[in-house]
Amino acid sequence: MKFHKTPGWLDWYAGPSKPLFKLPAGAVDAHCHVFGPGAEFPYAPERKYTPCDASKQQLYALRDHLGFARNVVVQATCHGADNRAMVDALVHSGGKARGVATVRRSVTDRELQDMHAAGVRGVRFNFVRRLVDFTPKDELMEIAGRIVRLGWHVVIYFEAANLPELWSFFTALPTVVVVDHMGRPDVSLPVDGPQFELFIRFMREYPNVWSKVTCPERLSVTGPKALNGERNAYRDVVPFAKRIVESFPNRVLWGTDWPHPNLKDHMPDDGLLVDFIPHIATTPELQRKLLVDNPMRLYWPEEK
Ligand code: 0GY
Image (cartoon, rainbow, N blue to C red; front, side, top):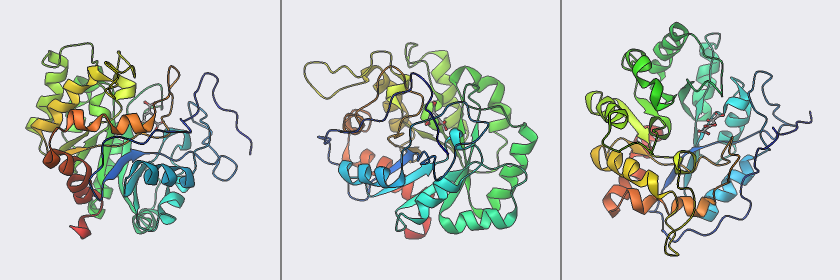
């Protein structure tokens, strides 16, 4: 089937630079996606956008170029609950990729077991209105109750302004809960203001809550522009991510978010994104936890 990408949508950056920051051995890109290719894995009829294709081969070439050892491939909303493209990427990774799926109540135990065998270790619940029509909370809680038995976790995606209304649902989840992109704070607000303090409280009071300190390119107002010729893009996001890394060093993950769905203003250079890491995890110990120890504990616990 031929798909035409949503107008205004940028293609992913084809010639990423080599990062100056040398990733620690065994580093995991813990948030990335595959899109299609649409001819092989059609996009879901209920999708809110049509991406450009981004194949598993292209993802794994980027992994090698940047110096990562492994990937966590997260189901993107353009594929709905059809996990075939993501699962195909896992099975062709030589054991170097694990995944996070989207499932509905109708998923069978057999399907869950097959996904587990392929390397899936979590499900994603999405509360970002521009990306999905919401699934009722009782259905999500039922799914969480089933996947916890497989040792999986729940990944949640929401905007900071919606945390108060989602709080009671999130805090009732019986699994490890991983928040995408720090709960999308408004980084033009103070890092110690009420909005971000609520997120910090969420992590402090619930030790099962983890955060991905990802997507400065989505959150930044100052943008990719470097200062003084240094590779210091997305500077306004640094205080937020750094605070989470330093407050909860054992519950943070990092990922590229390649191929960066829904970006219309600029497409990040993934090499520059990697160079964001030492600004938010400033010591080798914090870097090792963020990039190796934490993702390995969550996604490859049998190797720890
Ligand atoms: C991300 C962010 C976005 C999209 C998706 O599944 C998706 O479509 O996650 C977004 O548009 O903010 O994590 O990839």
